[in-house]
Image 1 (tube, protein in one colour):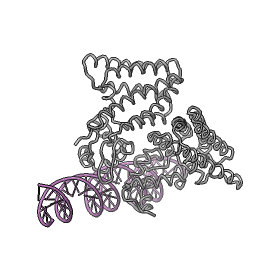
Image 2: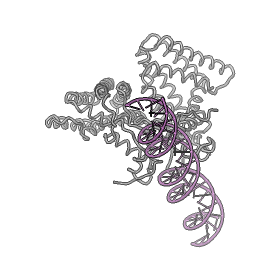
Image 3: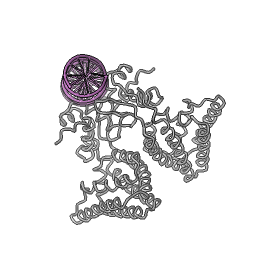
Length: 234
Length: 234
DNA sequence: TATCATGGAAGTGGATCCAAAAATGTGTGG
DNA sequence: CCACACATTTTTGGATCCACTTCCATGATA
């Protein structure tokens, strides 16, 4: 439970908690966020909640109209595509840099994470489940995180994180893990990237990673297009 | 003086004003920022000031230690290099996209802005002045802004802006405009980029823009290395 | 004289209070 | 029966207040 660490500002903690609730879908897309409700729920006053909401607005995860409150942002499909184009550029850069820096240890970690994904996919296919499990999401995140760290540029990592933090994660997971074909494609693309990294082929790693991210982006965009009429909750 | 526009939240206004003061050097690097002082200066209470400071911290322009106040951030030289590597990637992407989309109108605007730069450079060389004037800075900004807009991807623009907003602008201007040789180089690089854009040569525009940004980044990094010992005030 | 303790000053962070704006509900008139 | 005006309620945004932490100076003691 760890109510709070001593040296961490309370507002950051609150922001992280609200972000987490949005990310895992507990706070649905389009849902209005009442400061008072959040404050009582977290057992604090409205002041840190208000600051936290503003942080999230700055990050693009929610929208605030003056004097009208905040709602979980509903990204337009074309926005998703645009953001993923930028993400593809940045992740491509990360892969390119990682190709010449990654260690055997890092490659092993990548293979391990992809093995977890493969196993989860096989299991899901067997059980007929289609929802993205937390472990799947985590493994996917780890794959990209390892490459970012190998790229050894904190600013690059930060920029990629900012893009990811702008879209509810559970939606992405659902959209991407929802369809068996895409799940398999995803894993194969990961394999290809790992192979290029192992060969220290920067250009190929870059190109493959771009394709991979763009492919995911297109899938996610399509999901938002299908869903875009039905997201508003009352 | 427009005390405030009706629909803009006060905190954003305050954040913008503080940012402006940091950007133009009125608030020097390393200087501690007192909430009370800023509040009385802007004629508001401490609450919006505190929120504004947190926004700026989130943007990376200032640093806040819990219970110890905020200071204008002193970027480490290697951070500048890293950030500019990312910026080069993004601006390269912008140039690549702009190559196939830019209009004659946009090209004319680019040439115009570069003409302003050239004229300012000539005038500065004649007078022996070396400081970057506001018009120079503005023209430089416009050059990149026009290309970003031609690239037609708001997320891309936003990411580039975020990087730029993380470093005090006056420092960049001083560093880049301080040396005549680099000023000339800067203008020639702009010319080359414009030429590539006019030819709709995406690959060349990309490569030239990358070189241009990296070159600026190296210059700025060197400036920070020279300056890094002497910036602490107070 | 040097070092450490103690008390006050200054400053931040969170809670509470108040005014203004928007949404909602109600009653009246056409 | 519908529309418009007005009152009430809800919610936000800013100001003020209070507690706690940190910094600094002064003084006591070894």
